[in-house]
Image (cartoon, rainbow, N blue to C red):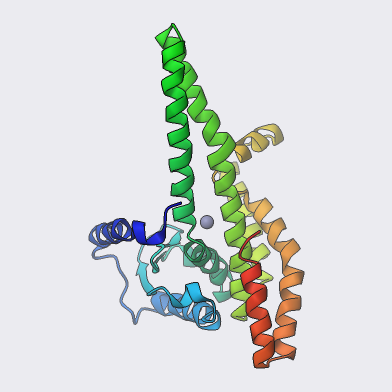
Length: 269
Ligand SMILES: [Zn+2]
């Protein structure tokens, strides 16, 4: 529905605001952390340069000195990496897991898709709410019905789509990093590690979550659980390794073209 071009001015404004907020915390380009991030991103983008949506963006990297374990890529191609993520990602292969995932969100225009979905559901909801308030005698009943309906829309439509796009970014990220010759077996290692770190931190805070509560929470989350991500990537890894084998064995231009098609096909689940 919406396109990336329509969002570009807003994204640029958001980027300028971010630079203003992060001023003084951006690491210089000769810093070790910056170079590590740059190496991984350059390798991923260079080895996937045949994909049109990789070539169409002006990629920029900013590494922020921060304890935050986070990274994100703006849809226009500006990559922000917080140095805390380097504490979690123990080597370049694991850093490639995170960056491949974030680059995939940008390449697949996930932000635009989510805004389109949000807009459509809100327009539909607004029409229903207008009708609801006109037919219900009690305004309190109408109010609670409205709140309930918005919550239901979020759980039934928005959150499942969020989780689907996360899984899609995981799968496409796996393909991007495989093509860039990173060790993709580190994907499930990384997410299992995240799961264990989460469990340790929950235990330290005495936040024990039972199986039923965990199932309910999974439906209320924007992201799949670390365990689910590790399992998904574990299942996809043999296929990707077989693909890598094909690339290495048949390193001809013909084989490269075939692999690009494979990559493009895998862009949708
Ligand atoms: Zn994500």
